[in-house]
Structures are given as C-alpha cells and as structure tokens.
Image (cartoon, rainbow, N blue to C red; front, side, top):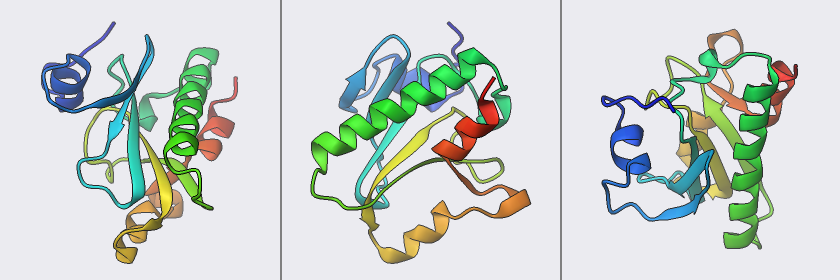
Length: 142
C-alpha cells in the first residue's frame, strides 16, 4: 500500500491520527464528513492507497473498479443519511482545482449551502474544474 507522509489524508485520516469520525471504512476506501461542507450533506470518499489526483488514473480495470467502489460507497452513505434529498452530486476536482493531493470523491446531498458554493462544483471544460464521477468512469472504462 502506498502512503505519503506529506499528505494530510494519509498521515491523519487513513492512519487514524485524528478525531475525524469515519462514516465508512473497508480495505479500499474510507469516508468522512467534509470539514468545510458545501451542501446539506457533504462527504468525502478517499482511497486507502495514496493516489494524488484524477490525472493519475488510467483506463484499466483496477482504477475503474476503485472509482466505481468510491461512488457506490458515497451513494450508500447519502441514501442512508439524506434520504429525503432530491438531488445528489458525485465528482472530483481536477488539478489545479483540487485542494488536497489525495484523490477524493465529493458526495453532496443538495441544496448547496450557501448557494454560491455551487460554483466550486462546475465543469470548466478543457480547463478542468469538477468532473462528475460517471463521466470519469466513462474515461476509465478498460
């Protein structure tokens, strides 16, 4: 398993050196609440193995399965914790718009709070921005 001592997610969350409550943990991913939520419910799902960004993923079975599992976990958590929400968003920030260099899936039960935060979750076309999980999975299909 690859970890990075300079990565806050590796050194604190995955290593369990923090008071952050894990909402889910298995051998591939962990999930927790975003410390600066942008929506009614805002969770992050991260791989246990250190992968810096979506740019480090390749169209291969291993990466496709990981992202698919991340999405499944995020959907399960929001369905459980925000069952009355009518809109969900799942996706990743692409460099240079990612805040932490450890792959993390944003799982949002809308509405955004405050509303202006929706700007952070917009696609910027060829410039990157936010990519929906389903669109990333299309790119990673082996």
